[in-house]
Image (spheres, rainbow, N blue to C red):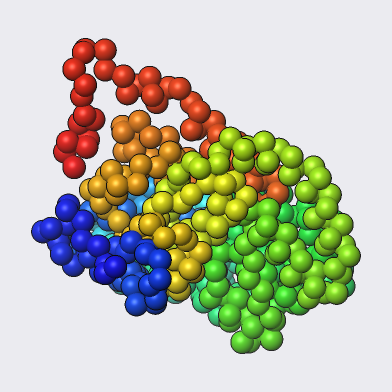
Length: 472
């Protein structure tokens, strides 16, 4: 089947290249949705900006680092507290937000002095914190503020601090994916190799592309500890700044989220000869496979099998209980990029569910190759979907639950369809064996919650169609 032109896209026919309905027997390489391309004018995108990809997804996770946003206060506020990545030091990074609070006069006359003042004030107010990341935003990039010069000046006056600069304004790329790339490459160029770690094990890894959403990193760390594997650096879940400066000393890069952090894994291989190993950490089968791959690299297969057996004995009966009750339920996944292909096969194999629609905000061609290969026929695959497309596809596939972010989640709740936060989770962690039981529990609770069906009842007599569908 060729690419799909939805009725709502009649006036924007270019959208047809971005939507594919999988059919048995087709060579899916001929029908990959166009992706990582500029949003078509006239469509209301759900994408985040490039600055958001650098700060909210990766840099802002660090637990001991001041995140200085050089721009209007809205850029700082919008990327603060919208993701749940806790830490073991009292959640420092979630408590505070920093901004140079640029106003019109500063845009006219320049903001370099204001940035210098803000950096010094932040360090003065938090004397125990010695690390900072400074980000440009759209207005400060447009007026040409030289944040590197300002940072160099401050570091010269404060020899005990270290500051990393991220020059990635919102307009730098077509989506937040550009921010991932800029921060990855900037970090290895400017910071990796500056700190020597204490080696405590003969087996060492970097765990790359995990951001400790509701404790993912801390749960997986228990596995590495039990296997006797030292994690030199987590990029960047529950991590501190200096750990990431010592990434060059690991023996293996284990990559979870390839879209947001595969770049630095590739550069570590190129520059330091550290091999890259990709795993999936959502789902029982995938997590077991990932542990086996890591253990095989180090020649400690027996440890891996013992860990898997212990976790299966503890958690598999609980997952089976949910699987029996979730079997046949239909699920839509409308998230960023890689979680589409991380989740689609795992929920089908381990929970007995069917994934019927997937939409990516910032996925690339390789992400769609993976998810379409893993997905079933009859599934919609959408790049950079908009609100009206979501509503029309819902009428075709009728999912029982939708994994998406709060913005789209608030829309689908008006249709009385349960949603689960696919970005920051409802009640995580979701990674690992215990985490996937948490995910199954949230799906079970969402699909069996009577409130949405009660909310859909119209006691006025005549059957009404939800207004939001009428508008669509």
